[in-house]
Image (cartoon, rainbow, N blue to C red; front, side, top):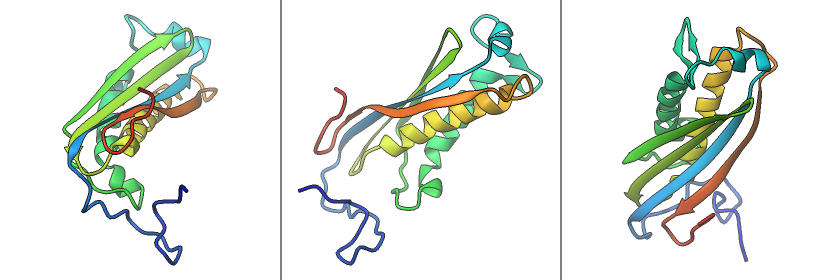
Length: 156
């Protein structure tokens, strides 16, 4: 029977004890989708938008990487992890900016939350850098696409 892993025997919040887990290569890919207005999309040239703050997508990648590295500072019961890799793939399809963040490391715990945080922070950065054009921006979806390593894989 499944149970919530972040509760101890007394139903108090608890960081999961990973001390007995095996060290394995762990990867996770998460995706966030940002829906922009026609006006904003019309300003994109060569797959990016240059603003007074700089390149929207390049800044989103940097912010997303910083967010992934700081996940344990944001989510109380996450283990602090030293990521081996944090990579982004961003594509524009119609009015959507599709952001994928893939994190990996060799450790005793997975990197799903880091990938989800990286994709989320990158999406928030796109919003922040484009809001001068319009506040009709929607971050419509953030989800885990795949996870490998540990006791189970997902989305493979």
